[in-house]
Amino acid sequence: MSKPSSPLTLLSIFCLLTSLLAPPALASGEVNIYSARKEDLIKPLLDDFSKQTGIKVNLVTGKEEALLQRLESEGMNTPADLLLTSDAGRLTAAQKAGVLQAVKSASLDQNIPAVYRDPAGYWYGLSVRARPILYAKDRVKPEQLSTYEALAALQWKGKLCLRSSDSVYNQSLVAGMIAHHGEAKTEAWAKGLVANFARPPKGGDRDQIKAVAAGECDLTLANTYYLGGMVSASDEAEKQAAAQIAVFWPDAKTTGVHVNVSGAGVTAHARQRDNAVKLLEFLASDAAQRWYAEVNNEYPVNPAIPPSAVLKSWGEFKADTLNVARLGQLNAAAVKLMDRAGWK
Image 1: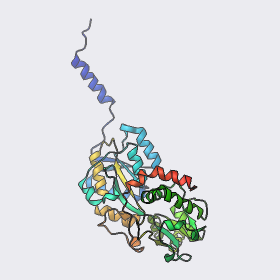
Image 2 (image 1 turned 90 degrees about the horizontal axis):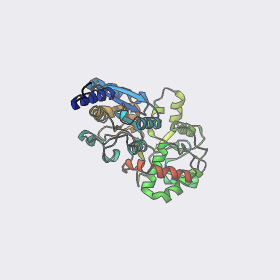
Image 3 (image 1 turned 90 degrees about the vertical axis):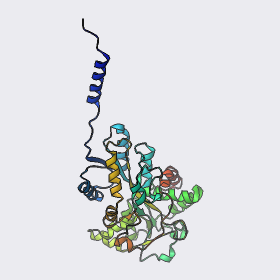
Image 4 (image 1 turned 45 degrees about the vertical axis):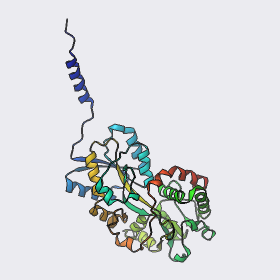
């Protein structure tokens, strides 16, 4: 008859089984990113980070919604250390889903103004994108323009092209309007925009710019980096279309131009948390911010870094000082309001 196992032996067996079943630890010299930004818009920066730090960057790119769903389904087993995406609405959605964790960094707080980061540190803006009025130079005079609100006036009936209400950029614009003016006034404004549509919403920001250039409409709202990309494009047709478009900075005497961010947050179950924070700090550094400006035609989130020559050519503007976190917090209200206004 065999002797019963001692408590020590059982504990040893339990510890061995636990170690065998546990997921393998990642190398300390790595960091894993889920990125909703196109690879060519971020890969050169990541390569520079690896050269400077010796930390290998493993990059997975995909659509915003798919990456968020992946993080949620993977839970504590996710390999991702950092989520990189566009728009404060998407960053806030990730925060609400519980897939991000708060981090504190003196470097990030110094380089990124408070209005461009989550107050609790769940995510940080890394580049600023403005969404002004773009108009046809040959059909609209700048003195005819003033505010976002004025785009709902009868004088623009049949002359406005906009993306659909599915666009998170438009959702954030409406969320910003709600924050400043309340739901009732914003809904009346949104109905006025819909009444002025030259065509049913379709396509992305570049498609709206091309539609204005082609004479399908006279005005649109688009993020400036799309126009910047067309100005310097290798495609001659895109360059010609961009040459017919001018930028107007609305609400100069009131709330300022609507701005948003691309940004990133450390995942809730990051195994390489320190490396993820180092990468965040690198992306907010002077060198990386210059790259965002010169290559991506985005405004640096760091106010000490000047914009590119293309961005400077459009003049200076007053940016809305609303904390972009509010855009995400009001996203659901904005989506419902756009639906009630008939914004397809």
